[in-house]
Length: 419
Image (cartoon, rainbow, N blue to C red):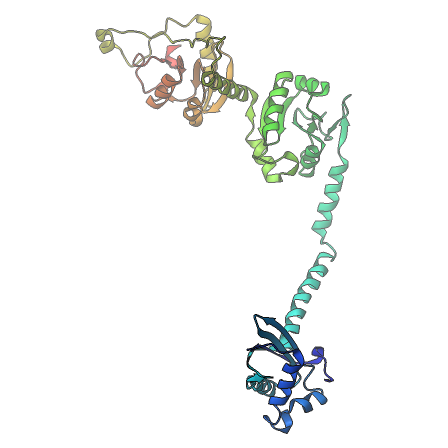
């Protein structure tokens, strides 16, 4: 038996064997020793190499398939490269095992030290990774960890409903209303302290009272549940602005950059209600009720001008007889308020301001809105705005100046000269 173990070997010879018949494992081992005897000289005699421990125990694995035997021969060696290669080549001279023809093929000679070296490198990487994760943090990491723990401790209970809130709710003129305690913790983590949670689906009395005293921004998750909360809170509480987390994300999991981006993009609650009204009208047109007739859309008055009047018409605006004095005064006051702001007011039939948008976004906003009575903006009326206004049945456009002749459209155009 061999005196060397595979652990102390430097090389391992991997060979495959194919035998045209059925033989046993001892037959293969006997053939290896018998047919290589005297082939390589006394120094490379397999029996002597095994006795001296330079060749390890020869492992043979065989399997019989359809009357034929296949298997694997593994020989560990502590010889040098050249001698190990000679021993491997000698195996391929075996042509018969017992009464059967056979074929031996050396697949590879494995350098055990390379395998060990690969193991050492991979294990060293793991150990270094563990060491790096357990080292002392730098001063900035310590500061961040302490600051975060302080923010976590700053969560208070506010009002008679004992709602989770930040420490700056009382002293701030503006507050942010979120859905739950986890949302408050995330905002505190990123330095926003004027936040308070609804802590449920029902609107607490504390939130209603705060809505009467402070400017409220409702900050909800970017999912269907967030839309439902907007509807419920806006119906029962005086809120001023609405903003949502990115689609599919919750306030408690978004990053500092996403929080500030969402707060910068907040919109007035009137604009949200207007969007809901528009969607409601679209649903009514798509699925009309058999019992409720669709509401009649008010048609703007259209002035019929004679050809002679059109030719004599000047660039200046003509007085609009359909406007009452109170309406003209209201339009004049709103236009004066907008001077220098480059903004636009969108009004309903009762002259209530549905929303305010930048002038550069006016055309795109009007395309998505319905039931708008008048638009007042700090800018110049163009043919593009008039075309959009006609499609959406807007009755009045009020601006500082106009590039479109009054009377050439069914939309009444008023400028600062009209007042």
